[in-house]
Image 1 (cartoon, one colour):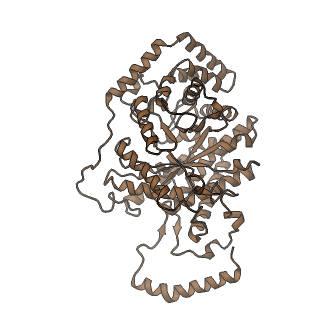
Image 2 (cartoon, helix red, strand yellow; image 1 turned 45 degrees about the vertical axis):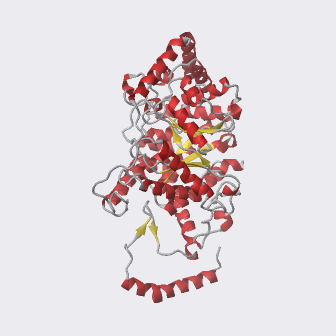
Image 3 (cartoon, rainbow, N blue to C red; image 1 turned 135 degrees about the vertical axis):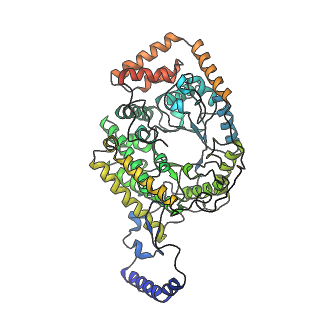
Length: 561
C-alpha cells in the first residue's frame, strides 16, 4: 500500500523523532510499564506507522464492505442500511414468566428473541426428575413438552420475529417447528438460529447425554434437515463465547470456533451435501471482552479467515458461503460483584467494540448478572445501552471506521496468523473431534486461563473494584431477581397435567419409530418431530435415544463455564 520511497522517509523521520523527542521524554518521564500487551498477551508497540503494514495489499487483505475477504463486514452498507439485531438472552422461572419478559423486551425495542433453557432442559431431564430439584427455571426456561414452547411463544408472531434458541438440540428445535405447524405457519418462513454446536458443548458445559461422535451425528442431522426444509433458519451457531469466558485468548477463540465449523462442513460433505447447500447458513457466536481494540480486530480477523477457508479449502462458490455472520454477547466473566454499577460501563465498551467490529446480532449483559438472572430494570438498561450506541453515538454512520489504522490492521493480521497456526495444529491431529478426544484444545485453553488469572492476581491486568480501587465495605445497590420455589412446583404440576391428558399410546408409537430411525441410520429429525407432537417429554425422547446409542461419559478434559 506504500511506496518504498515513502517508507524510507517514514523510517528516517521515526528514527529522528525517537532520537530528538522520545528519548528526552523517556529520560524524565518513563512509561508506566516496560512492556504493554493485549489481554491475550500480544505485545503492543508504542506507536504504529505504515511500516507495520508495509506488506499489506488493500484489495487482497482489507478491500470493501460486503466484498471478499470481508474484513470490513459482510454488508456493503454496514449499519447505514439496517442495524444489528438487538436480542437479550431471556429465560427463567417458568414458560409463563419467560413469555412476560419476552413481551416486555419487545415492547422496549428488542428486535429479536434469544431464549435460553434451564440446566435440566439442557441436560435432557424432565422437571419432575428428583435429580433436578432446586434447578428448575433457575438459569433458563424449562421445556419439558411442546406445551411449554406454546406458552413461551404465546401472543408472539413467529412469522415476523427472528428467534435464537440457546444450547438446544433436536427436541427444542422440533418444539419450535411443531408449534409453527400447529399455528398454520409454513416452516419455510421461520427465521432464527439454533445453538446446536455439540462439539463445543462437549468441552465447555461437559454435555454427556451422548458420546461426542453420537452428539455430533445428531446435531449434523439437525443441520441437514433444516437446510432442506427451513431455508431461512441458521441450524447451527459455532460457539466461541464459552471458551473465552473460561479464559482463552482471542486467537484461540477464533481458531477453535472455526475448527468446529470445519468439522461439521467435512461431515456434511461426506453425507453428500454440496458445500454451497449448507454453508450460507453457518452462524458463529463470539465474546466481547475488555480489551477494546483486540476485540474489534478479532471480529475482522475471523471474517477474513473464514472467507479464505470457505473459498480456498472448501471451494465454495456462493458468496454467501464465504460470510462469517456472527452474534456477540458481552463478557459475563468480566462482570464483578464488587461495585456492580461499573458493569454498565464495561458492557457499554464491550458492546461498542462489537459494533465497531461489525457484529450482526448483539446481547448486552445486565449489571446484576454477577448475582442472578437479570431483573426487569437491569435488562432495560442493557437494552438501552445498545439503543444509545445505535441511535446517538454516530458510530453507525460509516462502515468499519477503524479500517486503515496502522494499529488495527497490524493487530488484525497478528490475530489471523495466530489463529491459522492453531488451526494447522488441529488439522495435524486429525480434526477437531480427534483433537478434543485427545484433550489438546482443552489443555491449551486451560493454560491460557491460568495465565489470565495469574495476571489479575499479580496486578498485571487491572479490574476496577477487584484489584484496584477496592472498597472495604460495600452494600449491593441493586434489587436482585429471586426465583420463587413455587415456580418449580408450578412447572412440575403443568408437566404432570400434560402426561395425564395426552394419548400415551401415540407417545409410545412415536418413541418406537424414533428408535427404529436411529437403528437404521436415518436422519432423526422427522421422527423427533412426531415425538414432540405426541407431547412426549424431553427425558422420554432422550432415554429412547440412549437405549440405542448409550449415554456419554463425562470428559476428564472438559470444563464447565
